[in-house]
Length: 97
Image 1 (cartoon, rainbow, N blue to C red):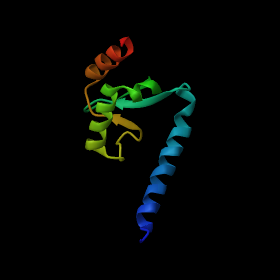
Image 2 (image 1 turned 135 degrees about the horizontal axis):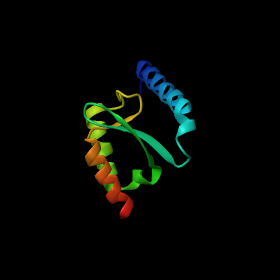
Image 3 (image 1 turned 120 degrees about the vertical axis):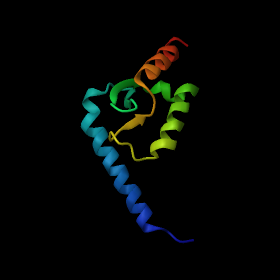
């Protein structure tokens, strides 16, 4: 079994970059929430409860984000590839259910 060091180093660099971004933006995101960027052309930042991560509709958005961006999100944070209006409508429905 061979260990691929270049991939381990790349993953460590990605983790470090993500960790520094989280620490930098941590002060303006309340505990129990996360920031996401939404939009097709211009990105808008939303802060949503972590509980949304368990909802099937939000998980569908996460799968689409994974398919489109992988782990290289253009805004530096989690980017959701849908329109702002669709995201607001979906999260409003999630909040009510």
